[in-house]
Length: 362
Image 1 (tube, one colour):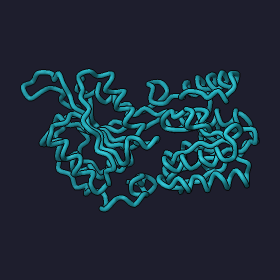
Image 2 (spheres, rainbow, N blue to C red):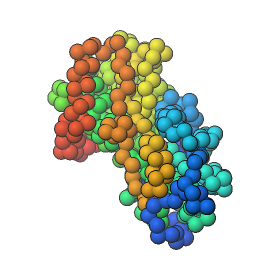
Image 3 (tube, helix red, strand yellow):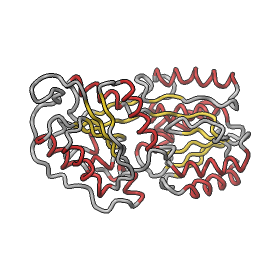
Protein backbone atom coordinates (compact mmCIF):
# COMPACT_ATOMS: atom_id res chain seq x y z
CA UNK A 1 0.00 0.00 0.00
CA UNK A 2 1.34 3.41 -0.85
CA UNK A 3 2.05 5.82 1.96
CA UNK A 4 -0.76 8.13 0.91
CA UNK A 5 -3.29 5.31 0.77
CA UNK A 6 -3.58 4.80 4.51
CA UNK A 7 -7.09 3.78 5.39
CA UNK A 8 -9.65 5.56 7.50
CA UNK A 9 -9.60 2.86 10.18
CA UNK A 10 -5.82 3.01 10.59
CA UNK A 11 -6.01 6.76 11.14
CA UNK A 12 -8.60 6.36 13.88
CA UNK A 13 -6.26 4.04 15.73
CA UNK A 14 -8.76 1.21 15.80
CA UNK A 15 -6.48 -1.23 14.11
CA UNK A 16 -4.98 -3.64 16.58
CA UNK A 17 -2.70 -5.32 14.10
CA UNK A 18 -0.67 -4.61 11.00
CA UNK A 19 -1.98 -5.35 7.54
CA UNK A 20 -2.41 -9.05 6.75
CA UNK A 21 0.57 -10.74 5.13
CA UNK A 22 0.72 -10.60 1.37
CA UNK A 23 2.45 -13.95 0.85
CA UNK A 24 -0.46 -15.50 -0.98
CA UNK A 25 -0.88 -19.01 -2.26
CA UNK A 26 -1.13 -19.24 -6.01
CA UNK A 27 -4.69 -19.35 -7.31
CA UNK A 28 -6.38 -20.53 -10.46
CA UNK A 29 -5.70 -18.88 -13.76
CA UNK A 30 -9.30 -18.07 -14.72
CA UNK A 31 -9.99 -14.34 -15.00
CA UNK A 32 -13.75 -14.69 -14.50
CA UNK A 33 -15.83 -16.20 -11.71
CA UNK A 34 -18.22 -19.13 -11.89
CA UNK A 35 -21.77 -18.08 -11.00
CA UNK A 36 -23.09 -21.62 -11.35
CA UNK A 37 -23.90 -24.06 -8.59
CA UNK A 38 -21.75 -27.12 -7.96
CA UNK A 39 -23.89 -29.28 -10.29
CA UNK A 40 -23.23 -26.92 -13.19
CA UNK A 41 -26.66 -25.28 -13.26
CA UNK A 42 -26.99 -21.52 -12.98
CA UNK A 43 -27.85 -20.42 -9.46
CA UNK A 44 -31.30 -19.06 -8.71
CA UNK A 45 -30.44 -17.38 -5.40
CA UNK A 46 -27.48 -15.49 -3.99
CA UNK A 47 -26.36 -13.99 -0.70
CA UNK A 48 -24.49 -10.74 -0.04
CA UNK A 49 -22.87 -9.53 3.18
CA UNK A 50 -21.26 -6.23 4.12
CA UNK A 51 -18.45 -5.68 6.60
CA UNK A 52 -18.31 -2.11 7.85
CA UNK A 53 -15.83 0.06 9.72
CA UNK A 54 -18.61 1.99 11.45
CA UNK A 55 -22.38 1.91 11.91
CA UNK A 56 -25.17 2.08 9.36
CA UNK A 57 -26.70 5.15 11.01
CA UNK A 58 -23.60 7.39 11.01
CA UNK A 59 -25.18 9.82 8.53
CA UNK A 60 -22.17 9.52 6.24
CA UNK A 61 -19.67 6.94 5.02
CA UNK A 62 -21.15 3.74 6.44
CA UNK A 63 -24.76 4.75 5.91
CA UNK A 64 -23.96 5.54 2.27
CA UNK A 65 -22.63 2.02 1.78
CA UNK A 66 -25.62 0.45 3.50
CA UNK A 67 -28.06 2.46 1.39
CA UNK A 68 -26.16 1.45 -1.76
CA UNK A 69 -26.53 -2.19 -0.74
CA UNK A 70 -30.24 -1.71 -0.08
CA UNK A 71 -30.74 -0.20 -3.54
CA UNK A 72 -28.83 -3.08 -5.12
CA UNK A 73 -31.00 -5.62 -3.32
CA UNK A 74 -34.15 -3.85 -4.53
CA UNK A 75 -32.93 -4.36 -8.11
CA UNK A 76 -32.05 -8.03 -7.61
CA UNK A 77 -34.92 -10.19 -6.39
CA UNK A 78 -32.76 -13.29 -6.28
CA UNK A 79 -30.38 -11.85 -3.72
CA UNK A 80 -30.62 -11.99 0.08
CA UNK A 81 -28.81 -9.45 2.27
CA UNK A 82 -27.31 -10.85 5.45
CA UNK A 83 -26.99 -8.77 8.61
CA UNK A 84 -24.06 -6.35 8.14
CA UNK A 85 -21.11 -6.59 10.51
CA UNK A 86 -20.73 -3.09 11.96
CA UNK A 87 -17.82 -1.46 13.83
CA UNK A 88 -15.28 -3.93 12.43
CA UNK A 89 -11.72 -3.07 13.42
CA UNK A 90 -9.02 -3.86 10.89
CA UNK A 91 -7.61 -6.45 13.28
CA UNK A 92 -10.93 -8.32 13.13
CA UNK A 93 -11.62 -7.86 9.44
CA UNK A 94 -10.10 -11.15 8.25
CA UNK A 95 -12.00 -13.21 10.81
CA UNK A 96 -15.24 -11.45 9.89
CA UNK A 97 -14.69 -12.26 6.22
CA UNK A 98 -13.80 -15.88 6.97
CA UNK A 99 -17.15 -16.30 8.72
CA UNK A 100 -18.95 -15.40 5.52
CA UNK A 101 -16.59 -17.45 3.36
CA UNK A 102 -17.44 -20.52 5.41
CA UNK A 103 -21.11 -19.86 4.62
CA UNK A 104 -20.37 -19.66 0.88
CA UNK A 105 -21.74 -16.12 0.72
CA UNK A 106 -21.67 -15.09 -2.93
CA UNK A 107 -20.53 -11.48 -2.41
CA UNK A 108 -18.67 -10.00 0.57
CA UNK A 109 -18.42 -6.20 0.50
CA UNK A 110 -15.80 -4.27 2.48
CA UNK A 111 -16.51 -0.55 2.81
CA UNK A 112 -13.06 0.94 2.65
CA UNK A 113 -9.52 0.45 1.40
CA UNK A 114 -8.36 -1.00 4.75
CA UNK A 115 -9.93 -4.29 3.64
CA UNK A 116 -7.63 -4.49 0.62
CA UNK A 117 -4.73 -5.39 2.88
CA UNK A 118 -6.62 -7.04 5.73
CA UNK A 119 -8.31 -9.51 3.37
CA UNK A 120 -5.39 -10.40 1.12
CA UNK A 121 -4.82 -13.86 2.58
CA UNK A 122 -8.52 -14.59 3.02
CA UNK A 123 -9.18 -13.73 -0.62
CA UNK A 124 -6.34 -15.97 -1.80
CA UNK A 125 -7.53 -18.93 0.29
CA UNK A 126 -11.16 -18.45 -0.75
CA UNK A 127 -10.21 -18.56 -4.43
CA UNK A 128 -9.03 -22.14 -3.84
CA UNK A 129 -11.51 -23.42 -1.28
CA UNK A 130 -14.69 -21.46 -2.06
CA UNK A 131 -14.58 -20.39 -5.73
CA UNK A 132 -18.17 -19.08 -5.66
CA UNK A 133 -17.30 -16.45 -3.03
CA UNK A 134 -16.53 -12.98 -4.39
CA UNK A 135 -15.14 -9.85 -2.73
CA UNK A 136 -15.85 -6.19 -3.48
CA UNK A 137 -13.72 -3.52 -1.78
CA UNK A 138 -14.69 0.13 -2.05
CA UNK A 139 -12.59 3.27 -2.33
CA UNK A 140 -9.68 1.13 -3.49
CA UNK A 141 -7.30 1.49 -6.42
CA UNK A 142 -6.18 -2.03 -7.44
CA UNK A 143 -3.12 -0.64 -9.21
CA UNK A 144 -1.84 0.77 -5.92
CA UNK A 145 -3.43 -1.37 -3.24
CA UNK A 146 -3.59 -4.87 -4.73
CA UNK A 147 -0.17 -5.02 -6.31
CA UNK A 148 0.97 -7.86 -4.04
CA UNK A 149 -2.03 -10.09 -4.79
CA UNK A 150 -0.91 -13.21 -6.61
CA UNK A 151 -4.44 -13.67 -7.93
CA UNK A 152 -7.40 -11.32 -8.23
CA UNK A 153 -9.77 -13.83 -9.83
CA UNK A 154 -12.42 -13.35 -7.12
CA UNK A 155 -12.08 -9.65 -6.23
CA UNK A 156 -12.97 -6.25 -7.64
CA UNK A 157 -12.84 -2.69 -6.32
CA UNK A 158 -14.99 0.44 -6.64
CA UNK A 159 -13.65 3.95 -7.22
CA UNK A 160 -15.92 7.00 -7.47
CA UNK A 161 -15.07 9.77 -9.90
CA UNK A 162 -13.62 12.17 -7.33
CA UNK A 163 -13.28 15.01 -9.82
CA UNK A 164 -16.96 14.82 -10.69
CA UNK A 165 -17.88 14.88 -7.00
CA UNK A 166 -15.64 17.87 -6.31
CA UNK A 167 -16.83 19.70 -9.40
CA UNK A 168 -20.50 19.36 -8.43
CA UNK A 169 -19.82 20.66 -4.93
CA UNK A 170 -17.63 23.45 -6.26
CA UNK A 171 -20.28 24.72 -8.66
CA UNK A 172 -22.83 24.86 -5.84
CA UNK A 173 -20.38 26.58 -3.50
CA UNK A 174 -19.28 29.03 -6.18
CA UNK A 175 -22.82 30.06 -6.99
CA UNK A 176 -24.04 30.24 -3.38
CA UNK A 177 -21.18 31.97 -1.56
CA UNK A 178 -21.74 35.63 -0.83
CA UNK A 179 -18.39 36.19 0.86
CA UNK A 180 -16.27 34.51 -1.86
CA UNK A 181 -14.77 32.28 0.83
CA UNK A 182 -15.48 28.52 1.01
CA UNK A 183 -14.15 25.71 3.19
CA UNK A 184 -13.37 22.00 3.06
CA UNK A 185 -12.49 19.51 5.82
CA UNK A 186 -10.89 16.15 5.05
CA UNK A 187 -10.25 13.39 7.55
CA UNK A 188 -6.89 12.44 6.04
CA UNK A 189 -4.62 13.57 3.24
CA UNK A 190 -5.70 10.71 0.98
CA UNK A 191 -5.38 10.88 -2.82
CA UNK A 192 -9.18 10.84 -3.02
CA UNK A 193 -9.43 13.78 -0.63
CA UNK A 194 -6.87 15.82 -2.58
CA UNK A 195 -8.68 15.15 -5.85
CA UNK A 196 -12.03 16.12 -4.35
CA UNK A 197 -10.78 19.40 -2.91
CA UNK A 198 -8.78 20.32 -6.02
CA UNK A 199 -11.85 19.92 -8.22
CA UNK A 200 -14.03 21.65 -5.62
CA UNK A 201 -11.95 24.82 -5.56
CA UNK A 202 -11.24 24.77 -9.30
CA UNK A 203 -14.97 24.53 -10.04
CA UNK A 204 -15.85 27.28 -7.57
CA UNK A 205 -13.23 29.58 -9.08
CA UNK A 206 -14.72 28.91 -12.48
CA UNK A 207 -17.89 30.52 -11.13
CA UNK A 208 -15.86 33.43 -9.72
CA UNK A 209 -12.07 33.63 -9.97
CA UNK A 210 -11.87 35.65 -6.74
CA UNK A 211 -13.19 32.82 -4.56
CA UNK A 212 -10.72 31.60 -1.93
CA UNK A 213 -10.64 28.17 -0.30
CA UNK A 214 -9.77 27.15 3.25
CA UNK A 215 -8.91 23.50 3.89
CA UNK A 216 -7.74 21.01 6.48
CA UNK A 217 -6.84 17.41 5.59
CA UNK A 218 -5.97 16.14 9.07
CA UNK A 219 -9.22 16.41 11.03
CA UNK A 220 -9.83 12.69 11.47
CA UNK A 221 -13.25 11.12 11.07
CA UNK A 222 -14.81 10.90 14.51
CA UNK A 223 -14.38 14.17 16.44
CA UNK A 224 -17.32 16.45 15.69
CA UNK A 225 -15.82 19.11 17.96
CA UNK A 226 -12.87 19.37 15.57
CA UNK A 227 -15.22 20.25 12.73
CA UNK A 228 -16.92 22.88 14.87
CA UNK A 229 -13.58 24.38 15.89
CA UNK A 230 -12.20 24.60 12.35
CA UNK A 231 -15.38 26.02 10.88
CA UNK A 232 -15.77 28.62 13.62
CA UNK A 233 -12.17 29.68 13.05
CA UNK A 234 -12.69 30.04 9.31
CA UNK A 235 -15.94 31.93 9.73
CA UNK A 236 -14.32 34.37 12.14
CA UNK A 237 -11.01 34.76 10.28
CA UNK A 238 -11.93 34.32 6.62
CA UNK A 239 -15.71 34.85 6.53
CA UNK A 240 -16.32 31.35 5.14
CA UNK A 241 -20.00 30.87 4.35
CA UNK A 242 -20.12 27.55 2.43
CA UNK A 243 -18.60 24.22 3.51
CA UNK A 244 -18.16 20.80 1.93
CA UNK A 245 -16.62 17.97 3.94
CA UNK A 246 -15.00 14.56 3.57
CA UNK A 247 -14.66 13.65 7.24
CA UNK A 248 -17.79 11.78 8.41
CA UNK A 249 -18.64 12.79 12.00
CA UNK A 250 -16.38 15.83 11.77
CA UNK A 251 -18.72 17.20 9.11
CA UNK A 252 -21.54 17.15 11.67
CA UNK A 253 -19.49 19.52 13.82
CA UNK A 254 -18.93 21.84 10.87
CA UNK A 255 -22.68 22.04 10.34
CA UNK A 256 -23.17 22.97 13.99
CA UNK A 257 -20.80 25.92 13.56
CA UNK A 258 -22.56 27.02 10.39
CA UNK A 259 -25.93 26.89 12.12
CA UNK A 260 -24.61 28.94 15.04
CA UNK A 261 -23.39 31.57 12.57
CA UNK A 262 -26.79 31.72 10.88
CA UNK A 263 -28.45 28.98 8.83
CA UNK A 264 -29.89 31.50 6.37
CA UNK A 265 -26.46 32.79 5.38
CA UNK A 266 -24.08 29.88 6.12
CA UNK A 267 -24.49 26.70 4.09
CA UNK A 268 -23.27 23.12 3.92
CA UNK A 269 -23.06 20.72 0.98
CA UNK A 270 -23.26 17.20 2.38
CA UNK A 271 -21.73 13.96 1.13
CA UNK A 272 -21.83 11.04 0.45
CA UNK A 273 -25.61 10.79 1.11
CA UNK A 274 -28.50 13.20 0.79
CA UNK A 275 -29.36 14.42 4.31
CA UNK A 276 -31.43 17.44 3.31
CA UNK A 277 -34.23 18.04 5.79
CA UNK A 278 -35.64 20.16 8.58
CA UNK A 279 -33.15 18.68 11.06
CA UNK A 280 -30.26 19.87 8.87
CA UNK A 281 -31.01 23.60 8.43
CA UNK A 282 -27.64 24.47 6.86
CA UNK A 283 -27.63 21.72 4.20
CA UNK A 284 -28.59 23.18 0.83
CA UNK A 285 -27.58 20.27 -1.43
CA UNK A 286 -25.69 16.99 -1.43
CA UNK A 287 -23.18 15.17 -3.57
CA UNK A 288 -24.22 11.52 -3.49
CA UNK A 289 -22.12 8.40 -4.05
CA UNK A 290 -23.56 5.00 -4.91
CA UNK A 291 -21.01 2.21 -4.55
CA UNK A 292 -22.28 0.21 -7.56
CA UNK A 293 -22.86 -3.01 -5.66
CA UNK A 294 -25.62 -3.64 -8.19
CA UNK A 295 -23.04 -3.83 -10.98
CA UNK A 296 -20.99 -6.34 -9.01
CA UNK A 297 -24.11 -8.49 -8.56
CA UNK A 298 -24.82 -8.34 -12.28
CA UNK A 299 -21.28 -9.47 -13.05
CA UNK A 300 -21.48 -12.36 -10.60
CA UNK A 301 -24.72 -13.58 -12.19
CA UNK A 302 -23.12 -13.29 -15.63
CA UNK A 303 -19.92 -15.05 -14.56
CA UNK A 304 -17.76 -12.04 -15.49
CA UNK A 305 -16.80 -10.81 -12.03
CA UNK A 306 -13.16 -10.69 -10.98
CA UNK A 307 -9.73 -9.98 -12.36
CA UNK A 308 -9.07 -7.12 -9.96
CA UNK A 309 -11.10 -4.69 -12.04
CA UNK A 310 -12.07 -1.31 -10.67
CA UNK A 311 -15.70 -0.36 -11.15
CA UNK A 312 -15.91 3.39 -11.69
CA UNK A 313 -18.83 5.07 -9.96
CA UNK A 314 -19.68 8.14 -12.01
CA UNK A 315 -22.51 10.27 -13.33
CA UNK A 316 -23.03 8.00 -16.33
CA UNK A 317 -23.90 4.93 -14.27
CA UNK A 318 -25.53 6.66 -11.29
CA UNK A 319 -22.54 6.23 -9.04
CA UNK A 320 -22.24 10.01 -8.63
CA UNK A 321 -25.26 12.32 -8.50
CA UNK A 322 -26.74 15.45 -6.98
CA UNK A 323 -29.19 15.23 -4.12
CA UNK A 324 -32.21 17.45 -3.57
CA UNK A 325 -31.92 21.23 -3.36
CA UNK A 326 -33.00 23.29 -0.38
CA UNK A 327 -35.47 26.12 -0.94
CA UNK A 328 -32.56 28.37 0.06
CA UNK A 329 -31.09 27.73 -3.38
CA UNK A 330 -32.97 30.08 -5.75
CA UNK A 331 -34.68 28.49 -8.75
CA UNK A 332 -32.42 30.24 -11.25
CA UNK A 333 -29.33 29.03 -9.37
CA UNK A 334 -30.70 25.49 -9.35
CA UNK A 335 -31.09 25.69 -13.12
CA UNK A 336 -27.50 26.91 -13.52
CA UNK A 337 -26.21 24.08 -11.32
CA UNK A 338 -28.08 21.53 -13.39
CA UNK A 339 -26.67 23.01 -16.59
CA UNK A 340 -23.13 22.81 -15.23
CA UNK A 341 -23.82 19.29 -13.99
CA UNK A 342 -24.46 18.23 -17.58
CA UNK A 343 -21.09 19.67 -18.57
CA UNK A 344 -19.41 17.86 -15.68
CA UNK A 345 -21.04 14.61 -16.77
CA UNK A 346 -19.85 15.16 -20.33
CA UNK A 347 -16.30 15.92 -19.16
CA UNK A 348 -16.30 19.40 -20.68
CA UNK A 349 -16.44 21.53 -17.54
CA UNK A 350 -12.98 21.26 -15.95
CA UNK A 351 -9.70 20.35 -17.60
CA UNK A 352 -7.09 18.13 -15.98
CA UNK A 353 -4.78 21.13 -15.96
CA UNK A 354 -7.23 23.24 -13.96
CA UNK A 355 -7.55 20.54 -11.30
CA UNK A 356 -3.78 19.95 -11.27
CA UNK A 357 -3.12 23.66 -10.79
CA UNK A 358 -5.02 23.62 -7.51
CA UNK A 359 -3.47 20.34 -6.40
CA UNK A 360 0.01 21.76 -6.97
CA UNK A 361 -0.65 24.34 -4.23
CA UNK A 362 -1.54 21.77 -1.55
